[in-house]
Amino acid sequence: MLEAISEFGNVAQSSTGGTLTDPSAAAALAVGLAALGAGYAERGIGSAAVGAMAEDESLFVNGLILTVLPETIVILALVVVFIV
Amino acid sequence: MSAAGSSNPEYVVARVRARRGSLYGDEEYRKLVRMSPPEIARFMEESTYEAEINALGSRHGGVDLIEYALNANLADQFEAILDWSEGRVYDLVVRYLRKFDAWNVKTVIRGIYTDADTEDVEVDLIRAGSFDDRRIQRLLEADSIEAVVEILEDTIYGEPLEAAYADFQEADVLVPLENAVDRAFYDHLLGSLGGDEPTRQYERFLKAEVDFRNARNALRLARSGADLDPADYFIEGGELFDRATLSRLAANLDELVTYIADSTYGDDLGDALRELEEADSLIAFEHATDAALLTYGDRLGTIHPVSVTPIISYILAKEREVENIRAIARGKEAGLGSDEIESELVIQ
Image (tube, rainbow over the protein chains, first blue to last red):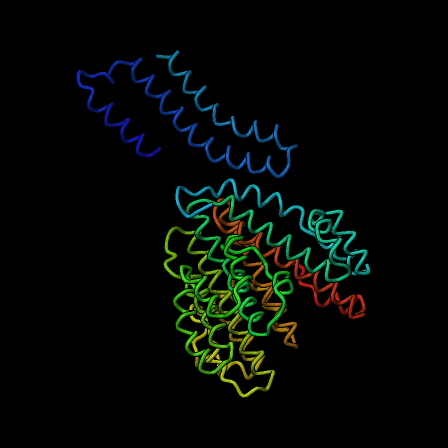
């Protein structure tokens, strides 16, 4: 996960010709990073949710909702795409 | 499953917290205290112990059934925790659960020493440690202590046991072997922990446990009037006592309690220690230290919700529940009154 981020940074830096000065490229990067963050958050929540469900099946709905909550970050990041 | 890979505290903590909810509370204990052993067994059958009571119901009865069902359930639950845990979490949890390995090894050795039936030994084992069924089976089938030492060769008990075996052959008493097992357990309990903040807290908790164990052992020795030096039974690793202070304090309960209250535990364990100060008997002292440890574990579990500490806190609470139910069942069998039994229970 963390290695992926630094790799991401490397790619962003090494792309010469000012790719990141292009607004839509920067927006795409923002969405991508937000998705990465959401994925990391969901990893923890998801495994806890599955653990709770294994003990008590009635927790399925709660677990599902809590697991996808970090997705809102990605949706908010998507707003940026429409603004630029 | 194993110590390899990344750790998954979230998953284990979620499961353990759910199970914690189904532990017996005040209400259940109050009911249990008023029941006879068969009623207790029935009550257990209707709660989390259903599978064990049903499985053992045909072979055992009365208080024995309760006792074996408790052991089986304890083993089951702890084995499950080890199954779920991976990586660092497994390493930390197994350190604590190895005490059941130590218990099993000692039980097997004692069984062989006294020529007990394999079946009798088997029911006394608590299969909650890190040994798998195959190793336990081999231990049960071992017909001499030498064979036991050989089976444990590749475990942490291998070397210490081998070293102690010579002493055993010389003197023909079990003390060196049992000491070797205990020492191996405590050496690995605190060895090379390191790591992040929750782990350091966990280490402090383990040290507290060692400290209280030391205090308890010293008191027991002092009370028993036996001419034994508490320093010989001292367990390394705690931070409160060293050999000399322990021997000095063991003679006087008040001084010992004041010493603990003035120590670093005083701040954390205020209420429990006040109870400890009021404790006049050895049993009350032991119960107070148990309750203090439980409170300590719970506190840690709340401070670091996603770490090993809530898991340990559950393990402690479960052990306590098993001991409480056992105390109720045994107390009923011995014909104790409700009040007396209640005084035997450690309820937070």
